[in-house]
Image 1 (tube, rainbow, N blue to C red):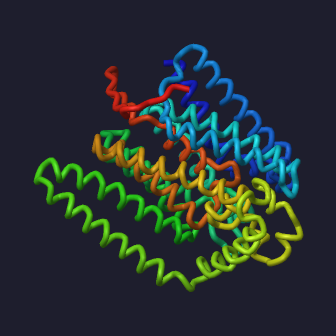
Image 2: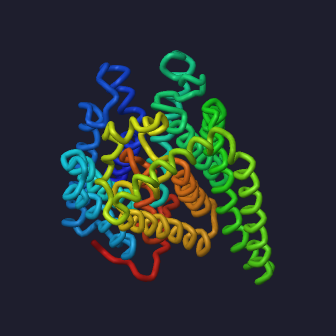
Length: 411
């Protein structure tokens, strides 16, 4: 039990670190250090997380308790981590690339820790981290407008901007609703409170892309689970109904995006995407060096929107920093994460697997309009974990129910 609690604590603390907001809040707001990825607080937190995760994996491996990981996920995560570190050999700023890319190796170890947790423990770690971040953000909103509001008076809480707060709020909504369906009594009330808190902060943030991602992700999970349950009850025609529902949902999302396409949310992103694509064209295969171009004044000062520090699309940022090879490896990890979560929800349709599928889908959708592959983000860590996970490992009370895929690989 103590070991389980230790893993939950490590995951909760690690996720808070990778949310970036808490670390930068301490570094910038409390200690008055510059807003800098290499600042004393943020850098040290990521180093500590990387070392702790690597030690945890090595000790588990030595004790024979690491367990199986998905073969394809191991290969994709390892290749991505090694490749981004290799980009320091030809980077436009080798020292920056080297230090930042090595942190990604540590994040891969953190993903392994999460991947080998039972689903209940993983959920507990997620809930603790998200709840702490959301409660702290609401407190910041109530106590200090100068800290918690951006220049447009949108809520950012303890985060650096609204686009960092809103996805955490979205995760809170999905986790809360999923747990409310699954749990009873006080646990259900606590879950509903988490979902409600997420909704309040999402509304305050003013983010539309995050709301779109929440509804789309919930729709994906609902279609998969209800189609699977319907097939068992009413036969094969349920699959056709599910496919039709998915098509209608896709059409609805397309219509919403089309209506928003010329609004500032997407208009500014399209400008950024065009500028980044031009830069990708200079080194399309091997890239400019991982997480590096955004430190180069000659690039970031070429247009005011580039001062925001990312391409606002993870595929483009992977391509910019690590070339076509890095982008392909990123997409491979994402595809494996989605495939694994979808398979779990299809094989074992219940609230837990549906919630995990909704969360993974949400993380993937968010990467279309934000660069969560950068910033040492919890989003990337959870996607790697999903790609590495072999089935859902569920625990209920004193009994254990394990759902494993057919071809695990132990590392």
